[in-house]
Every structure is written in structure tokens, then in C-alpha cells.
Length: 192
Image (cartoon, rainbow, N blue to C red; front, top):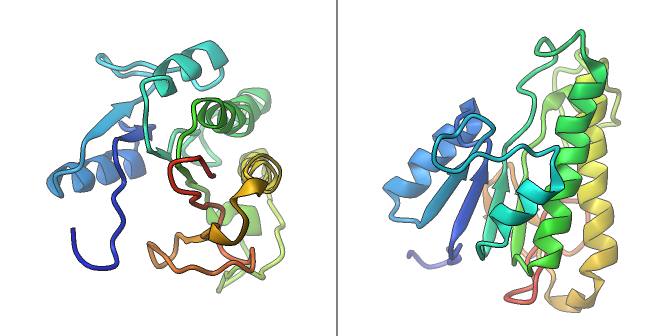
């Protein structure tokens, strides 16, 4: 491990057969990381994010880091099934966060989309106002809100040691302003 890098411990990647999850899983494994990938269609580790019992059973395996990439992959997928989109993206994220909290997972990184900001913006940053143009975008915004809300409530005991994970730069920068992307680390005790 290089200076400034943190040990991710045992890693779980949800949505490991999707575009982002598969790429992340390959990269982590190439770096020598101990990674378990799960996906709805996985033969070795299937998991339906809308079923809390399945999510809990997977996360109970003892992971220090969860990269939550499992979701409907875009606004065109299941466009005629808005409730399914909501259940997979928003409820599925809530299930991952709750199981991570219950089992003391040290960190959870939740993947999102620029769709939470709408389609008319050329540049998006942390202060851009959300304006989701679809159920897909709204469900991902709800997943972000759940992540931030649970972090603020359930892991508030982290105190001054809390770290916000900057997903854009891919590094933990120590920013404690709460203005970074959803994430955090409270050491072994748990954080979102």
C-alpha cells in the first residue's frame, strides 16, 4: 500500500456484473484486494437488493468496505416500471446501508449518477441543485439522501475523526465540512 492510501480490508461490491461494478471489481482484484462481488444474476453470490434478508445475509459476511454499485443502470432501463426502479435504487440502497450499520461495516461508498442534476447542465459539482428529470434520477437522489441522512444520524458518534470521501478525486481528503460526496470513515466502529 502506498503512502496516503487506506486499507480497505475485505471488500464487497454490489452490482458486480454491471458496468461500474465489474470495472471496479477488476481494478480492485488487480491491486490484490480481497473482493467479493454480488449481483442479482451472480451464480456464486446472488443478491436481490430489494430483499433485506438477502442483503443482510451477504453483508453479515464481515466486510470493512462496501462499494454499492448495484442499481438500475440508467433512465431507459425499466422506464415503464417506475416502482421497480424506485425499489431497486432507493430501497435497495437503504437495505445496504441498514445491513452495513447493523454489522459494523467501516465504510460504504454509494455510486450515483449525474441524472440527479437533470440533463441541461454542462458542468456539475457539489453545489449544483438537484433537478432529476425522471424516476430513475429521483430514485438515485433518494439513495444519496438516505446515505447522507443515515451517516448524520447513525454514525454521529464518529466526532472529529469523521472523514468525507471525495468520490470525484477517489481519495479521502479529511474534509469535515459535509460538502463532499456521500461517504465517511469512523475506523473499525463503522461509518457510511
